[in-house]
Image 1 (tube, rainbow, N blue to C red):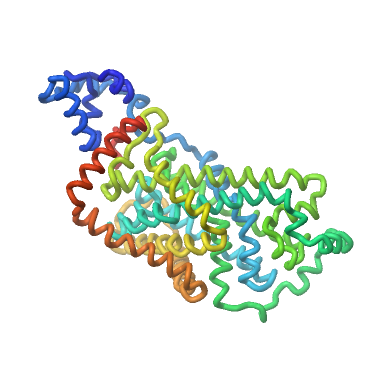
Image 2 (image 1 turned 135 degrees about the horizontal axis):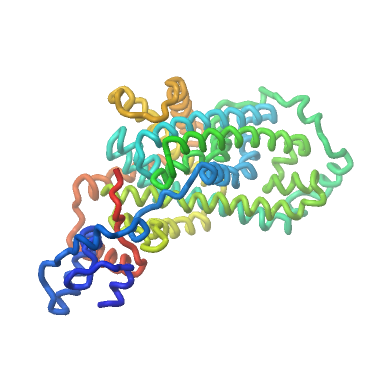
Length: 485
């Protein structure tokens, strides 16, 4: 009995040696287990909670998410997450689908502005609704439980695993590419490029070739560009862990996204200064090819630097994505075991572990272009829904406190453009977009069976309760002890 109690780091006592605070807040399935233990020791009865001891608990002893992210860490977190694999793998997709170099640069600038508009909208949402959870929280507060649950469903089913798999594949590609670069690019082409010189300003002379533009492919070019900027909303996943969120969230978002937009456009100008469009399309690792021609003394270091950048993005995604499942479980829209926190690390460990199996499956079976198309539709559809919900909430509750409020034209423009891109992608890439749509709708019956009207068979409930009980003990996790307003 005692080793189990030490497992939960408990200093407070009741008549059976258990913490009153924990016994009040642990999931009901775990309380069943506690009663079973008491019965086996002949101690069945009403537990008496020592209230004085509970009141003496310090903040360090309480199990909850800490506010430890200041302004500089917030800016670093957003930039470190955004500037990852996207800028190194998306240029090829943007160029293919835009049709010319000049139009691809316009797409990069447009995606930067659009991402900044979305980030400003999410800055307002993050200061209006102070809970973590990002899209789930905002949809729940503005449009209701079904859209919120569907966003939670697709995050678990494919958005979270696919986004992690994309970065992992990019990491692997940049680690492996230097060893196989001669096979990826024909030798004669490399020799020809070496003869023609280093700075190819002639690439910009006929940069805008509108005859090669096809409107049905343009949304795919924008999707690739937006993927490179993805991560601007990651700070909203951890709102409860940001110091002074009303000030730091808007400032961090604005500073980081303006910097990233300028950086991305300049990086693509550098790409086209050194590489012809045909050369860029032949490369599976653009930064490595660029370094081979432009930075001959540092070309061997570029894959390592790119890989480290991918790892930073991977770390950011793994850090924030489980927070949505954690908040969803805390609100009653996901199994309660995923609303628990590790008692020492103060992280949602069960929600984190849930993401790994599907991520491994997507890593084995998917490729970069398919994964990007699969996650982009649902991701941007729910982002557009969230900003639409913000506009509806503004109309319905005009007196609701909004510490940071963006001009109306920004959310309206962002919402309209986002819905246009999402709807047009059904025409330009019907297979991947259709699969994404069907997977999203598959959450509707799950919602009505498990949330709206819980109707799982009793046998399944007993199995689920037993597994939850054992996992809670094994992972050393407990319910949050600080109420979130």
